[in-house]
Length: 299
Ligand SMILES: O=C(O)[C@H](O)[C@@H](O)[C@H](O)[C@H](O)CO
Ligand SMILES: [Zn+2]
Image 1 (cartoon, rainbow, N blue to C red):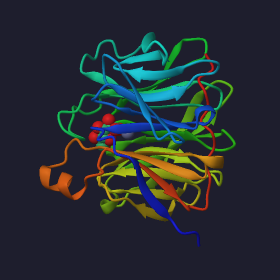
Image 2: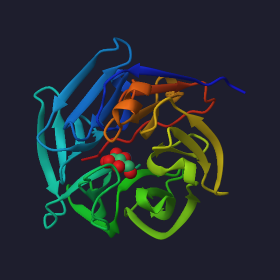
Image 3: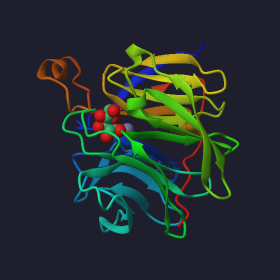
Image 4: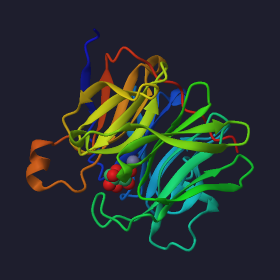
């Protein structure tokens, strides 16, 4: 057994940290603080952090082939230029839903940027239901819509053979799978591969490891869990010293470290005293399993 170590590497006090993405070329971790309208880049070597502030909630960030980044800001897919701190809209969704915003997003193995929407929350997990949809931005700049009726569009990733798309609508308390056609970007045959147990609370962000197992951050559950999507069994639970764990990704040397984001919003003063690292960035080492590099948006 490897020995697991959990460390808060950055006390960022994020209101809602999300969308951790490892940028290998810069030895850095990208992540967002959604309500703070902020995207951050933490340099793992110098331990310094840079921020870019945008004009609406920023819910995910991803690498872009060639230059810069892409991000979901408000209801827009945007190109993000770090140097001049500009965000340029590439496409807008949910134009008829003024209270909606994007939530989690990730790029597929063919370079399409997938992201879903949700109604804005009045408190964590309190919102008008069934308002969200799942979309993707293709490399040619057009947007496709997959389905609607989503509560809180969250974790997403693809199987190692690219034939399955995994997806979480948080308030379904389920991790779902679809057949995936990488050529066309089409999904079909939705089914559940894991139902969360009560103490695991709300499934949020997700990533896959090199063994094809899924890691899911459990909001209010203070943990990440490792699931076998083939058997539907939970293989491992790793608890963190904060309750509102929101998302996870692999990074660091050979993608052998796991980075976990979390939130402060919705915590009372007493819990904040008990969990002073809430809103920080956590690094987990010694898991004995690795992840895969993130795919860049190909447009
Ligand atoms: O980060 C997200 O995915 C949402 O934007 C958050 O608000 C919380 O995670 C959600 O409330 C818990 O389900
Ligand atoms: Zn999330």
